[in-house]
Image (cartoon, rainbow, N blue to C red; front, top):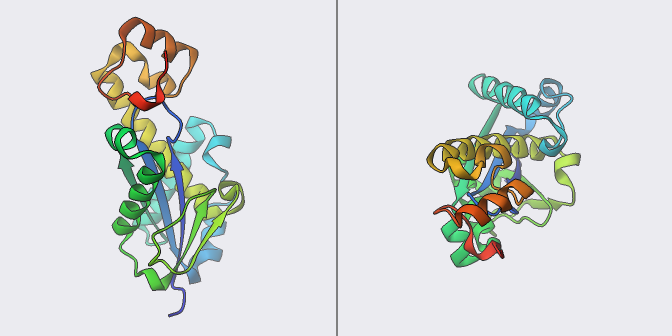
Length: 197
């Protein structure tokens, strides 16, 4: 079967001490890639963009999804799964979920994945690219979707657990976060297997 869609996949939240892992995916019909590159000229990996720039590009993604150019999806894997099953299993679960949300025939797509990520084996056309978020537009867009959606989730969780500053550090192991852990102990959303204080 010929390649009808190209899908980029990236993850955000592998390293934080709290909160979920988020997998992002962005899909484009193969025949629309040239137009897509024009629409998203200047996009970079989410780590190279400011929060404002990420939000702006995410808005452009949403506009282009409603216009039929791109599809995107995100999938969360919670801290309990990470603690119980480990990060490698959590990544596999997240990638499976996000591809299921896109609902694209596995044999009709090429899946491009960042770093050491792999799609389920029934996606027979897949390619893992080192630093793919810097080299492939669709992986960069997937990283933006995942980062924006995970940050929004952490801001919401900060309202439930205001003493930890999740809206500031998004669960990463900053000096402030460790200070809050020493003061308050673990919250219900901390990854117990990640924390040694």
